[in-house]
Length: 393
Image 1: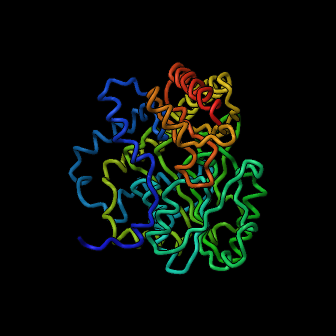
Image 2: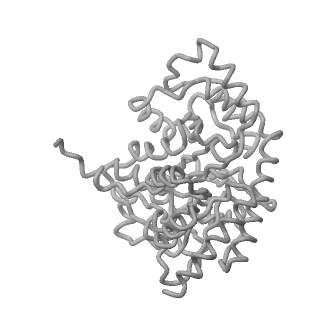
Image 3: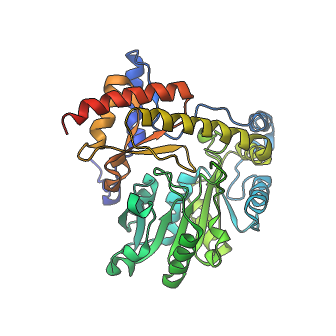
């Protein structure tokens, strides 16, 4: 059998992907599945995006290779969004990188900036592609355990000095998946200053910038002075516009940084289907008519989920952003055991905290991506499993 590289052998299990077969099996058995696993809402994309895709499918010019440039109006729409939303100017030609989903771009970013012996500081719990991209670049992962008593903020000053000396890349994600935590401005200022002092690339995953509640408005990292020297920021249409399967995203950064990612992509893909990029334009241009209403639906679901899980004995905080509840379990109760029992006995899919790395143990993540009545039903089942297991802890 051909040899598999150590890079692949080191890759962690991707929990969401591994669940797909289990879910198909349960549905085939007739189980009424309530899927609160992936951040993948049951809501419709903007009608304008759907119409643009249908139209684009009939335009011959949009069926050809996009290459790195892609559909240029998509680049312009991204730049216009960044200006309108954050007050930031980016050159569509040199400072915008269209992506086939932000996951792809974040993982490939490591190939541009890491090599053997380098370290990436990775939040744990965190999105699996942070560690995956680092390992595929043959670099070392330093997992940083996010803690509730530190408001789930990653502090570079806590990284061991010998590790920090080799650190070339830092992944940050606020609003945070899976914890729902947000980052205060003074924290971001401190991180940017530390990255500048140590010449560390700050990879800022801002996929949830538009999914915020109760008046909270998430910033761009580029609102922080000095960030343009060390940062690259990733955005996605997936959560904001219910377009997860469309794989429509982008990165922004100053030319040397954005250009390095764009160069890597030249050797990996030939660009996203341009009809989908044209739909991305329509989505971005429908922000005012679509996003506030969509966010209101998520806020209704958040409130319903918080109330339902609290009623079942779970100590739940209401997040100011994202589509997730990060729910603590009783001490000593393994999150994988709780999630497995809930799935097998009641057909409710949640993600154990351990699936986000060892630092996530003791929690489960639920996605409030279904209507309130289904969230209440899932919470009742979760309460039954909790009471059953508490007697054995």
